[in-house]
Length: 144
Ligand SMILES: [Fe+2]
Ligand SMILES: [Fe+2]
Image (cartoon, helix red, strand yellow):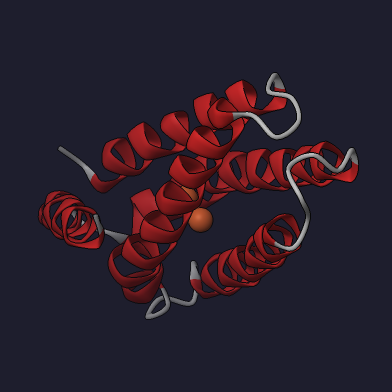
């Protein structure tokens, strides 16, 4: 497997969780369950991706800007998660912030999957692409 496929699988999981969360209401068990699942998925993914995708791509002039931009967006995502953590599930503003998070994450994933993956595809050789997928997946396991 290539690193792109491994990352894309986790992105799709994040998209599913975000859509399901958008349909939850108030202080419900479903909201709590999906939200905790989303937080874990985002946190593990950010660490694994920064270590086994961004870090090696920092070494190339062609992808250093994409990596820096991605890390900045990971921080923006963290801030929205923090805002959600500090809001009661029953507060109507929780869903407003969740929608902001959904837009932010969806934009970020699209950025990564389009321009960034394309440039990274030119920078990494085939053995690096599969090696990074293995390392990325091991890190994801370790984060669980
Ligand atoms: Fe990312
Ligand atoms: Fe990602």
